Image 1: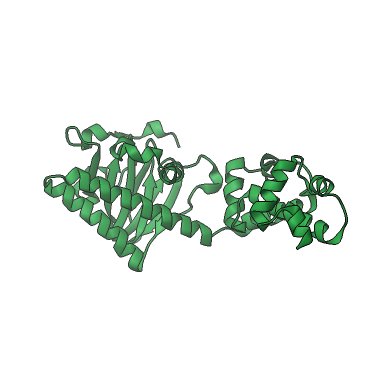
Image 2: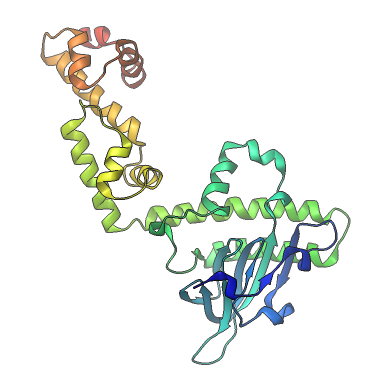
Length: 296
C-alpha cells in the first residue's frame, strides 16, 4: 500500500502558533474519521469508548475500549466504524513533534532506550504488532486514561503553564506505556522465539571455549543482531556476553577444584585469551581470585 495515495495531516494545520503538541478527541476532528491518512508527527491514540477497526498500512485491527496505538509519521492509518453494527470508536489523540519533549532527556540513557524502542519503531517485521500496541483494562486503563484526560483538559483550558504540564504528563505517559509494552513483551514471547534462544544456549554450552560472536548466532537464527540480543535477554534474563562469561567461569571453577592444571592453562581452555581479563571476570563473579578459590 503506497503511502503517497493518502492525504497528509500536518502538524502545522493542527498546532497552535509556536506549539508542537495537539490533544483532542476523535469526535472533534470528524473530517479525518473513517478515512485513511498519514501525518508528519507522532501520534498516541487511545480508545476510550466504542469499538471498530483501526487500519494501519495493510493491517486491519479490531479495536475497542482500552486499546492504545502508537503511530509514527508517514504511516497511513485510520479509525473506522464497526462493520457489523456501525459503532464508532471514540479516541483520545495526543500528537506531537519529538522536539516538544524536554531536550535534557536526550542525554538520559533510559529515555534514549524509550526513544529507540517506542517513538521510533524498529523496521524489523518480527516486531510488528498484530493488534493494539497495548490492550489495557482495570487499573492500567484508568491510569493511562487519567493521563490523557488531564492532558486534554490542560490543552482545552489553556491555563498559565499548560504546555509545561502537558509536557510533564506526556513524559509520564511515554514512560508508563513503555513499561507496559515491555511487561507485555516479557509475558508474550512466542514459542518459536523461545526455541531460537534455547538452540543458541545449547550451542553456547557446547562451544563456550571458542570465539563466539553475537553476530554469528544471530545469522544462524536468520534475525538481526539487535533483535537477537534483546530476545536472548528476554528469555534468559541475562545478556549474551554475561551468559558466556558465566559459562566459562563455571567451568574454570570446576577445573580449579578437580584438577592440578595451571591457572593460565585453565583460562585458555575455557575460552579466555587475556589473563588480566580472566582475573577481572573471575573475581567479579566469584568474589575471589582463582588462587583463592582453589585454596578455599
